[in-house]
Structure formats: C-alpha cells, structure tokens
Amino acid sequence: MNTNLETALIVLVVVVVVLLVVLLAAVLFQLWRSAKNMAAALVTINHSLPSILKNIEELTDNVNKAAYEVKGGIEQISSGINKVQAAVSMLDVVKPLLYSKIPTAMAGKLMKLLALFRGMKVFLAVLQTGKEPAVKTEGGESVPIRPVTTPDKI
Image 1: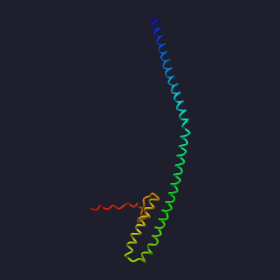
Image 2: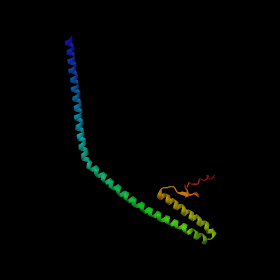
Image 3: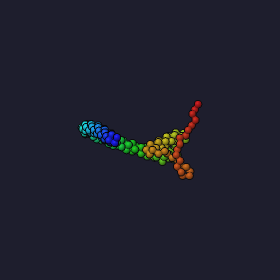
Image 4: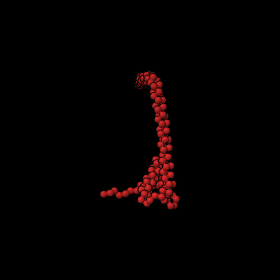
C-alpha cells in the first residue's frame, strides 16, 4: 500500500510538472507574440514621428505669431483708450469754465453730454483694468458702484 501511495504521489508530481511546463510554454509564446507586435508598432511610430514633430513645430510657430499679433492689437487699443480717457479728463477741467460762459438752456444739454463722457470714461477704465468702478464716500472709503434698478413700465 505504501508503494501505491508513493507511485500516486510521483504520478501527481509528474502531472503537475507537465502542466506547469505547458502553462509556461503558453505564457512564453504569448510574450513572444506581444514582443513581435510591439516591434511592428515601434517601427510604424518611428516612421511617422518626424512628420508629427514637424506639424507640432508649425503649430507652435503659428500660435507664437498669432500671440504676437494679438499683443500688438491690444497695445494699439490700449493706446487709443488712454487717449480717450485723457480727452474726457480734460473735459472735467474745462467744465467749470464752460458753465460760467454758457446760458442756462445749454447748460442742461452740456451736463448730459459731460455725463455721457464720464460714463464713457468709467466704461473704458473698467474695460482696460477689468475692475468694478468705485465711488469714494464722505468717510473716504471706496464703495462699488451698483446699477440702479428701476421698476418696469406697465
């Protein structure tokens, strides 16, 4: 009985070793196929890589040129905005002189025109800085200007 058990164990060990060899052979075969496929993929990638890099270089050049042109346009717009703001500021200086020389009927129209120019000045300042305009209170603190809401007409 002892010999039967030993024989059975030997057969079992041989079967396990054969199964391991078969599984190892299958795994090695799959690894070999994967390596072969990777080599083909690398050849394809290496073949197309120079054209991809050339396209990326062209795109980078185009983006740099566009950014340079946009920067020039923004500088021109900023210069124009500064000129308009200077002209509107000059109107604030001239306003007291005009009020003393203009009849009362025209003063109202002039006030509306100056208010329009002030509004343009604030609009351009906000457009240029991106900050919300503020008004100084009697206490000296800055309070943001909020739009006035009016009830809808019926």
